[in-house]
Image 1 (tube, rainbow, N blue to C red):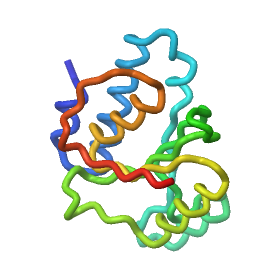
Image 2 (cartoon, one colour; image 1 turned 180 degrees about the vertical axis):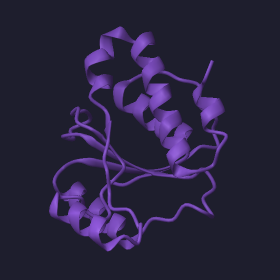
Image 3 (cartoon, rainbow, N blue to C red; image 1 turned 180 degrees about the horizontal axis):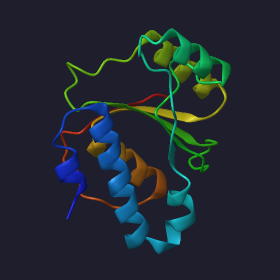
Length: 148
């Protein structure tokens, strides 16, 4: 069986995000009372550095923006309208936030949304668990930075 732990062994942002959505699928089964809320979590296509000028201009015209967080949880909790998660690889020396991502975080917080920078899928899972009041056993070494 493919598990978040197995998927998350690959230290790429894509693998970390895939592992997180695998974990979310498991939580939807374990917590049927949160089915609606957990089913509304989604990934956001953000601007990639492909080097393809035509694809980049098409994406920009279609509303794809640089710096937007990777995941949106459109469920209000904790006096916030929703939660944005920026995923990074678990190794904090490799995963750095761009200036555009910092700017987006600042803007979204002014609009009364929560924003967290998560290093690895376990970090993001712990944030989501806390957001929804789910108790989970996540290693203490997971790193998350959530600003006010």
